[in-house]
Amino acid sequence: MSNRVNVEIDSIHSRAICKEIGERLGISLSRESPELPPRMRTQLDQLRKLEASGSPSIVPSIFGFGDKQ
Image 1: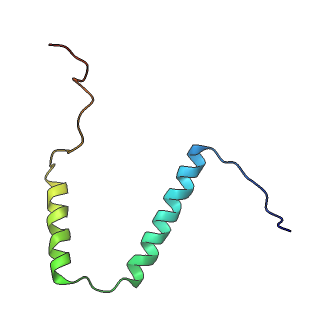
Image 2: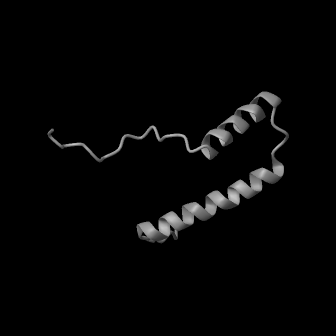
């Protein structure tokens, strides 16, 4: 027989737990990760430059929907 107890947590705590797991996993993987291949490093550098330059979002804005002009 199992001695498991169901524990319910709210969404705030669930998100906090997920965030902490992600941060710890990122730290763990960054220590163990081998050197990236040059092509992948170049692509990541390009992505960082695009993010820093304020590229427009590809997500559509909710503003303007439903407006009848």
